[in-house]
Length: 543
Length: 88
Image (tube, rainbow over all chains, first blue to last red; front, side, top):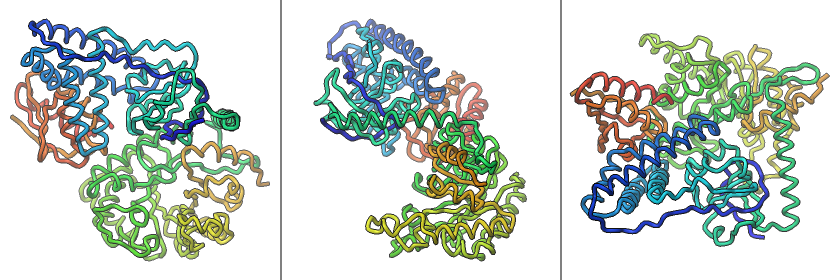
């Protein structure tokens, strides 16, 4: 048995026989020609045939992976007609008096290396798109087709890398999984695999290609990114079990879509999802979450090389609010600092970053950064049902300062004649013991609390959650932590606020009953856990 | 010739999809040359590879110029696309 590890792009397990993907590449030779006009005519024919094929692939993709993901093939058609690309090909044919295949291959290399040298990883990956369309044209001179890989039984496709068009062209009913030696998770191929719900592991390394042959048994674990070649009996049994458990679980959970989050005795709770960017909205909707309980706005800062502008932030917030179509969306203001460092903030090194200059502490000492974010949030509020929450609160005076800034922002917007919603809910994170202990004073100031259990545990038990030596001490079910949550819940309700939990503990189903008994109103979990928690809630009887 | 400067709002910048949308719309103005200029690069608004190669990122200021038949309409359309984040 050989084991390889890459990146899993779709969580599922496949066990089956290998089919090595044969790309029929016509080898390109440089041939001297006399009639350049005839050569350009050949080029036009090959291009026309390529566009026709791309149109067919586009139609297939439209049905299987949806319009957004199919659009790439429309752009491939555009690239084939691109002026610069065509000028370069024709120029090579005319000045060097060479065959069109060779001119396309040289142009392909030039354009691909231009993209590969860009300082943007997204654009570097586009080199593969240029090569994909160029190979298609080249194959069409000889009328070699890659589209008809005839496969009789369901197989695991293994290749060095797969182009997006090759991925979509595979017959979905005959592909168990695919494994590639190279490629990145950002590639369109990975995105397509996810959308086609095919287990896939990419980037297992070139050694894999040397070992494989058609018909070999292989196990692909899309969860862990592991690939087992010629598995031994123990591995095979273990993975068979994991596979049937997984499909059983998926089937069970899918039946829970559209059902209420209600206990056997009729107590209801909201189950929302935590996300870290607009890309995850699809997963929120797919898993039937009732709203977004934690939208981490840090990605806007982490992905940028300078402070994100108001306009940039507004666009992202508007998109998430519109996509959720009136369901609650709670956006947390930036939680930079500690383990999330951004160079342009120039924060300097700290002895104790978890206890240092982070989150709301930065916002209140640099109000210009904070106000940009608040203006963007208020402006976006008219597009949906917005809640705003503030991290790392420890005192009443912090909340007073925040509310004063909210008023300033609202005042400015009114004088600029810009609309904002009058029903925005304002909340704070309970993630320090201080906030939980004075929650009786904080609750009257806000609409809701959201308990951030990861930090609350680390600060209450004085233990670094990253430190492996502290695993025994860092008891996530510690009574002190649960008592702080219970105190906060009691104080919230006494003052008419609601309380949710958005840390990892919210997805811990061994505590769901405890939380329900405390009167927690909302649990916010990773999208993949929404249905699991719903299942737990529906089996609890509080009476 | 008419021109206007806009700021890119798409978080991923002018990547493949926005470039495709822009090219499709600008090709409708066949007798008008529309150009995109940033501080250090320029690209023809009908050339998908040039636009992608310009690697225009979020927050970048882009000067759009239109020259030819229906230049104001072409410019207005381009500005609208940039401002709306190309429908993303």
